Amino acid sequence: MNVYDSVIKETRELLSSYQARELPVSKGKPWPLLKENEFLLQRDVAYELGIRTRPGVCYNAVTSDSELLEQDRILLYGRDLPEIKNDTVFSRITFLHIDPIEDPNKAYQTVRRLDFTRFKIIPKGYMILSSSMENRENIRVSKKAIQNGLDFTTIGKLFIDHYKKAARVNRAEIIFITEELNAIGQLEKEARKIEEITDAFDHILKGLVSDCDLCPLHPICDEVDELRQLHFLNRLP
Image (cartoon, rainbow, N blue to C red; front, side, top):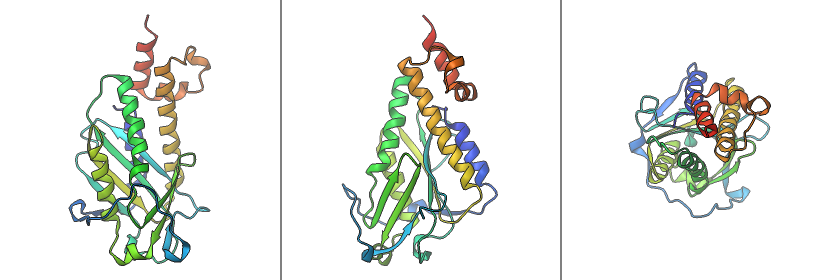
């Protein structure tokens, strides 16, 4: 599974000129996960992550290249949760390493399952409002959670542990961004590219593409070699 590798590489390149803090994965606090999203009233909220009028992005990218993702990591660009005092911008990017999957249908199903997994990660006091249409998250963080020491080390560890319980996930890298970076606009383009790759993957597997020259997904297939090879194989008699 290497169809998203170019997105991972480009994301890292876009962030390379900014300073990140690497948070210690092993220091994540034990923290309860909820089965359903809680509703936090405004009086219970310390602040919100993700100002709706400011750019922000959220996306996952999967790879089977061990060199691209050698270990679990949590990276933070900006302030940590205990350091934030008011509403701020927010982005989250996740890279997941899985074993190679030869069956294209199983590979596609795994990508979809892992993308859906993020909706099941609900830390107490960390109310997540996700918009898959806009590729972004807005978070309400409770005053009580901050008082009890909630930080991005803990949130990141919860995400990593939960993803690793899912089928085939070996390692995960979670990137949090709480400062305004000029690169966010370009990162939004990478999120859209992931959607285009996944849509092309789906179209090829369903046999919906008959004439490449007329297909709107033609450019993305030309760019991603693995998709082009898969399309060729699917068209063989």
